[in-house]
Length: 381
Image (cartoon, rainbow, N blue to C red):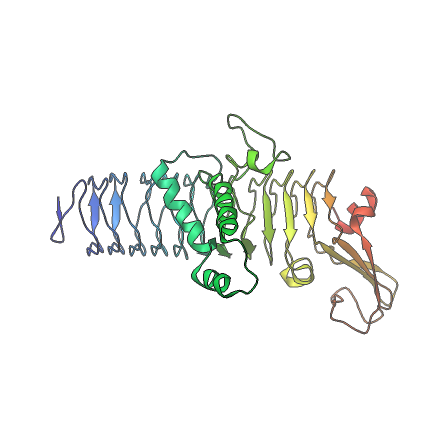
């Protein structure tokens, strides 16, 4: 097949080729090299992508709807505003990619490496992230090199060691690093978000947890055992993102500002608020109406209570933050607190007290020490 002066065929070397704005139909690009190629605005239909290298490619607004892209390497590519809806991306490498405005609706994404990618306004609605993919030894080593490049002993560290008057056994440092890589290898095969930037992304209806896989190990068991098929998302932080009706059962998740967990399945989930003063109260708070939080664990939640001039008592959760949520068996960390303001004549329902307010004394209570009925009252659920 000839397109734009290039021969499109099995094992083609198309590195740096300009294939922008084209329709690529029924082509065989298996094991081809398109590193650094420009496919911006192109449309792929029934293309064989097996073993294709798309590292550093320009794939802005490229249409991959319904394509089989299992195991394809997109590392460092620009995928902004591309369309991967209903595509098969199992085991694909999307590390260091630009996913701004990218559409992954209803795609299959188990075993995908999303490490250090930019997920701004990315749509993952209905995506299935759960599951484990077996990789070849070559692919495992390639992904370990990503981890080693970011976390291994670097040049400055080596120079500091050589000039240090108190010598540390360099062999011990290298051995410790090797052990860490061996642990990291256990994460390869599951979907990973390590170091990813996630802001205003949509995960509505996506599946992360609720495992029915073979050799299933309950999330409460050892981390290394449960790692087989559960996506690793705790090593990044989420802000302004939507998780409506998302299945996060059994996951660990770190959240910052304004995430929406309406009707999400958070059973047995560990939810950590990363900024207690801003992520739990006020306009930046995270919301959980009708969420299933049974047997979950919540860290660093702040709930505030105060009274107005007439003696009416208000909670910062009165706006429906947890309305209708199921909280039986919900556990709280020691830093999850109910903050009660005692000199609060300055505050009314529309003016929440803040930790920065010096005019009002307050008293803190550990939420974990409150009765279930009191928890339901303060969470208004």
